[in-house]
Amino acid sequence: MLLQGLIKNSEKNKQMQYAKMLNGNYPVFSQFGQNIYASDLVQMSIDKIATEISKLQPKHIRTDPNGMQTVVKSSINRLFKFKANPLMTTRDFLEKTIWLLYMNYNAFIYPTYDILTDSRGDIKREYTAFYPLNPNRVEFLQDEAQKLFIKMWFGNGENYTLPYSDIIHLRKKFSVNDIMGGGLNGQPDNAALLKVLEINDTVIQGLGKAIKSSLTIRGILKINTMLDDDKQKAEREKLEKAIEDGRSGILPLDLKGDYTDLKPDPKIIDKDTMEFIQSKILNWYGVPLKILSGDFTDEDYQAFYESTLEVIIISLGQAFSSTVFTARELDVGNEIVAYHRDMMYLSTKAKLELIKTAGEQGLLQDNQKLAILGLPPIAGGDRITQSLNYIDKSIINNYQLNGVKAKNEKE
Image (cartoon, rainbow, N blue to C red; front, side):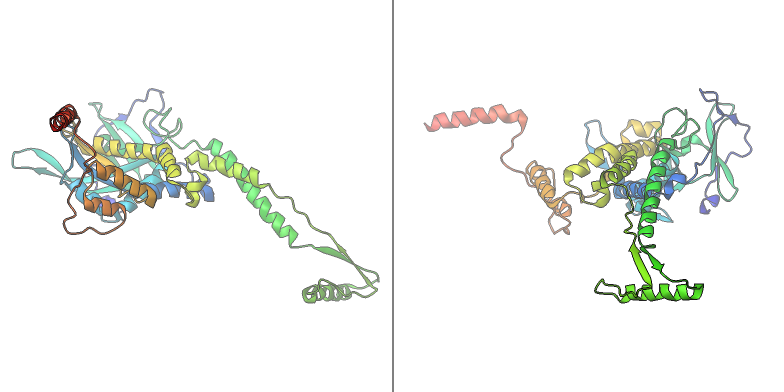
């Protein structure tokens, strides 16, 4: 892989031992099999989540002591604007990361960087790329100073040992294992889902067989004479030809043959049961059928966002921030936040309501309002307008008293 020449700080010659886990197990984990991903519903569910997350725009921001946020001019924002690494756009990078997270319940991201010294002598990292990794096996090790390392094996046989603090680690269903997401062994625990998938597969196969059986044997032709094989074949072909040519629905037969219609009636599963089985699979991933089919309202998407997407977005921001920034940088308000881009998922009605409410409060520039509607910016569009129907809370009393005073003077 191309990362082979980029991982520079591999600790291959350092004396280390397995990290100690509270449950007494060895911290050695291999990737889970791909059994469940043969299901179309599983693939569509994960693809929907990965596609929605790929629409996010991660940004490096800084929050000052007064709570004001500004977008920082940094190497991180430069990377996230278009390409997270030379092989992937930001959208590709986010999509692949989410696929790896849902396939393995763990996703590892390796940031490459250069060490620079600024004019004040401070050392900082200049990030050059973010790579999602897909190791076949990982081990967690400790050195004499109890510093934690992660050793990763890849498909080409190469292995690398890196400080765990340098790896962005995303976890799903982080529960009984001390380090990894998933089950006790750090792998996806899909036993319950596999039972439902087996039922769903049986139903689909049974449906196919039922349809096939209904199109094969349609009836029995009884030939009332003793015929050899060749003559029986000729009689059968004669009947088949009559069926093909009988557009009126009437079959002409001579006295030698009787035709009995079998009236095939294959039994297939009812609609409600089929929807119940499929809904259990979709609910496992938190993707409603309306979201999957694209037939959703703003309220449907908001519920999908809050129940499924929001926790991933929070996890992305916290995992990136805690890895790419030092403790000092975090203290002064640096963080990574993944924003929805231009609120394009909203309906036109909801967009207009958003523009009206936020615009009246003076929160949006004219160009930002146009961007929400999917329109290009205009000259002078950095203007901010605000409704006169709102007033600063700190001057409400003076405003009302002045109004009463002016009214009295007029009277």
